[in-house]
Length: 349
Image 1: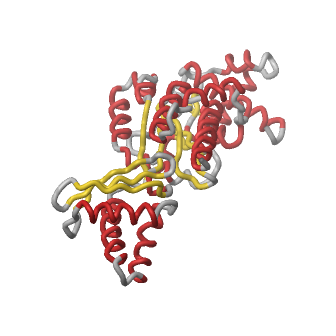
Image 2: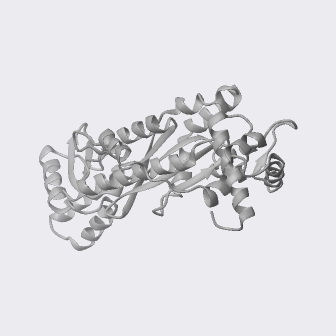
């Protein structure tokens, strides 16, 4: 902890208050801190420092005769300037890898396991922002007639990400015409990013003036409709019961109700977390920083995962503001790194 001796003492006392409150859910008094410091500071000095921390907005006193508890500002200062990063033991890193490593190369199963494992290991709610085909490259495209003017468009990406959508076609398609479209798409489009498919087909339409023109036009029509209904990301959540059972919510049904409403409305949380996934660092949002109605008493820790240095999703935990931030940060960072390594390995073949 950098700074003067006095600043270091203040930081140390704030750290001890937060650690004790995270563990006990009870206000922390000066005598407890004095015992932790083993007589290095008197109770009177500690009370004075705790009073200064309260004046600075880092601690608050629920009742006049009670000890102190951390504020959002206190947690924020602790996360940014006081807590030290922890590396997970090698045994725990191996445990994470063994928990999420799928028997089959299926991204959805991998990410579902990652969410389940993170919730179980942290005893918090976990979330995974999962990639869709829009963030990957074409491995295969299949078209299956399901009606007079309807086809099932199945898009398979390199990481075994699969999306399927029923598309209404402008023209009748015979079995032979459908087969010709499938041959064209898999001969010409495999290996292209899904994000570039439509532009590529539009360029082909401008250039083609022979029989391929009709294949390109029909392919463009079908893929436009299929990709327009495919979301950019999906949000998976696990372990919500861990959060609801925490004292902050189990003792207050109204807060628990607001929490569940906030979690049920997935889009605001997805939007907020998505903003934090552009960089490579782990992000911690505390209380009102989450900016989601109903989650004002919560914090989240999130990390991106990537395929060959391209961010494709995110993983994290969400729980009460009273959480073990160093451990949560280490767990989320390790999970993000493991997912990046696995997905990149799959992409490379």
